[in-house]
Length: 340
Image (cartoon, rainbow, N blue to C red):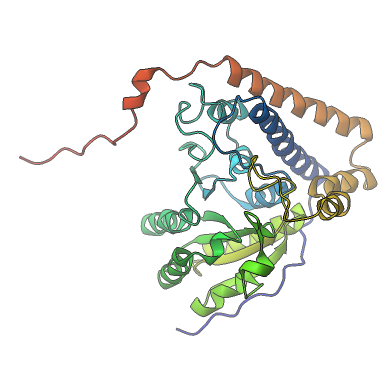
């Protein structure tokens, strides 16, 4: 089979309405305020274990969810709260799971890295680096087998891109023309190691060339650019042309997890990204400069979001801890009946 032509860096942006812009602003702001609150609860000892915040990367998942349709699937890594909120999962259920309460999506037994929603087709955050990638291919294989025209978004980071199972999955996905979009959320640092030190090939999306997979690099700090690239990738997959790779260049403002002081980079570097490249501020300026919203309009949105987040935090505190009997539930699926 001939190698398919790969794409260049994505620069196109879709035309969107004022209402769409406001929706993206609201969704990104919800993720940021939610993550800020989660960081506070972690500092208070109400969230235990690991807590990986998505602050700075909001445009990636909001842009791609804008390109998705009902029934499309998503699976991601441990930096997953933003993905849950962007696909419509209830902030109360997400926060309650973070605090290990009964009202959480996994009844308080899964925590940050093990939440799922069958209703929203969210197949979890996964703690094993890169393990979600072959799972994403499996989800796409199921859809291809059923012929239901669905697409799967398999998210992973720049560090996970070096995992062997990612290369193996690329090969299988291309062989079988699976409708899966491999989303590399390149936030520049794999835990505490920059991509420049960890990867000899800086263009991670180009690794698909060896398998004939199309792909492109996208500005992950621009929600409109991400949406445009997402729509292109989705159309490619729905047309039966096989997988697609999106390397979305983004940046996380916090450390790898709440326990990471991020001393491997300077404060000036982070501050420059906040001041010059912030994805939420970019949309805010588009709304103001285009006379699509006033300062008061945006303040009202911010107030609404803060109320939603505060309610989720209160719900997570008031929800009871799971009963001891829950230790023995949800361990195995019901056994299929056997013929005598």
